Amino acid sequence: MMTSAAPGPSCTRASRVNLLLIIFLTVLCHAAFNGTRVAVSLFALSHGGSPFVVGLLMALTAALPMLFGVASGRWTDRVGSRRPMLLGSSLVLAGALLPAISPALPALFLTSALIGTGMMATQVALQNAVGELSTVRERAHNFSHMALGMSVSSFAGPLIAGFAIDHFGYRPAFGLLAVLPLATLVLLWLGPVRLPPPSPHAQQHTDRNVFDLLGTRELRRVFIASCLLAMGWDLHTFIVPILGTQLGLSASRIGAILSAFALATFTIRLAMRWIAGRFTEWQVLTGAMFLAGATYLLFPFAGNVWQLTCLSFTLGLGLGAAQPMVMALMHHIAPEGRAGEALGLRTTLMNSSQVALPLVFGAVGAALGMTTVFWSVAMCLGAGGYFTRRR
Image (cartoon, one colour):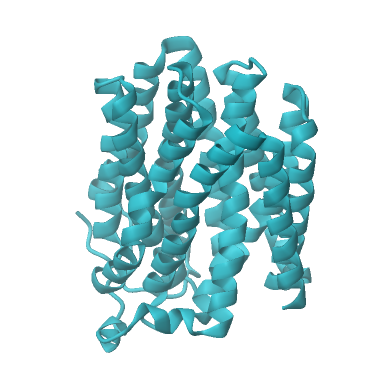
C-alpha cells in the first residue's frame, strides 16, 4: 500500500494525474451507491412495498451517517484520508453484496444502512483530499472536476441498475454493482494514489466543540443552503421510482430518467469555470434554488416518460451547479485543521434531513398525495433562494 503524500499545490502533471485517480475512485464508489439505492427502491416496490417503506429504506441510508458524520470528519483530520476510504468502500461492497446473497425484503434495510455509512466515510475523505491537495485558487475548479466525476457516477449507477434488473434480475444486478467498490479497494491498496496525511493542525483542536463551527455565521449559512439543496436532490431520488412505477414504466426507463438528472449535472459542471468567473458562489446557489423550486412546481403535471425526463434534466442543471460552490465555500471558511470536521458536520446535518424527510414525504404522499410533497419542497427551495439572495 502506498504511503500518503504531503498536501501541496496541484500544479504538476503528476498532481493532475493523481487528482484524476482520486476522482475515478469517487466515480466507482458513488456509482455503486447510487445504483444500489435505486435497485433497493425497485426491489421493495416489486415486492409490494408502499411509498412509506421506500421512504424508510431511503431514510436508513442517512441514519448512521447522521450519527457518525462529525466523528468521521474528525477521524479524517486525525489519520488522513486513506483509512476512512478503505473502510467506507468495504461497507459499500458489503451492502451491495448482501441482497445478491440474500434477496429478501428484510436484507434491504441492512443494505441501506451499510451503503449509506460507507458512502459517507468515503465521500468525506475524498472531499477532504481534494480540498487539501488544492491551492486556494484551484479549489473551486478542482471541486468542479470532482463534481463532474460524481455526475458520471450518478448517471452510470441508476442506468447499470435498471438495465441489469430488466435483463438479468435483481440478484445479478446487485452482484454487478458490488464489483465497483471492489475495484475501489483494489486501486486503494495497489494503485499509485497519493492522499493527504493527517492535518498538522488537527491536534490544536483536541478540546474543540462542534457547536463552534455552527457558531460561525458564514459557515452556518453554508450549512443551511447545503441542507436545502440536498433536500431537493434526495426528493428526486426518492420520488422518481414511485412515479415511474405508478405510470407503469420499466426499470430501464426509470433508471434512464434518473440518469437524465445526472447527465444535466455533468453538462452544467462542464461550464463551471465560465460560471465561476462571472458569478459569486452565493449567486450560483440562489439561482440553483429558484430553478429547483420552479421545477418541483411542475412535477405533479408530468404524465409520461418524456415529461419526467425533461423535468429531471432541468432539475439537474440547477442542483448540479450548486455542489462545487458549496464545497469551495466550506474549505474557504472552515478553520485550519477542521476541514474534515466541517465536512462531517455538513454530512450530519444533511443526513438528519435525509432521515426525516423520506419518512415525511412517504407519509404525506400516502395521506395527501405527492402533489403536496412537491409543492412543499418547492416553497422551501424558494424561501432558501430568497435567503441566499439577501446574502
